[in-house]
Image (cartoon, rainbow, N blue to C red; front, side, top):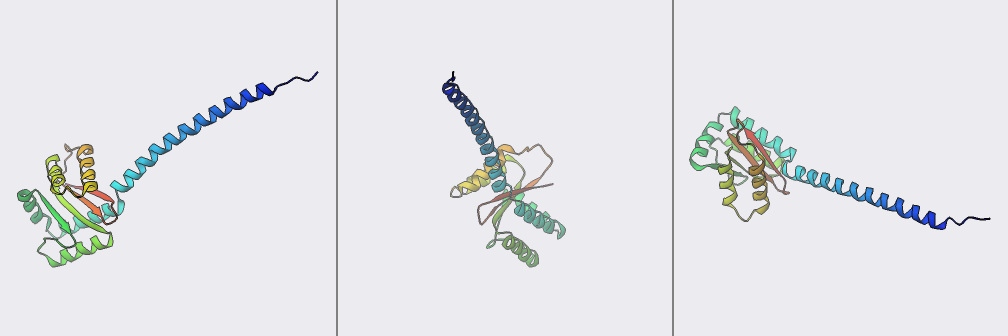
Length: 168
């Protein structure tokens, strides 16, 4: 006598398929979250730009220009740097900063006080640059302004990546 097990085999296939599909969907959701966080990190925290901002900061501090800029920040609330507009009297430092900006593809950067109001001032300046304003809003929401920093650099590269650097 031959036993017919076709119905039992079909039930096994359905159960195993349901388990596999559930596992694959769970993996997809998990990796999608990780990928989104990776994309945000790579766009909002560009390591080359952070290195460039640190080089600029070191140059400004070493050559005693930073104190001059701080006085301007106290009156104007921020300083805007782009390749076409670097308002530093020292031509050597001006050219050095331009070279760094060219080498690291920095389109522009701001130097401002490390507080929420100063970032809001920059956000309200330029409504055309929505992505940079989103980056500044992200910083405004996620930075701890009780930390002992005084100033912050915020930059945008030509290809749309962003970075910031806090300064004591």
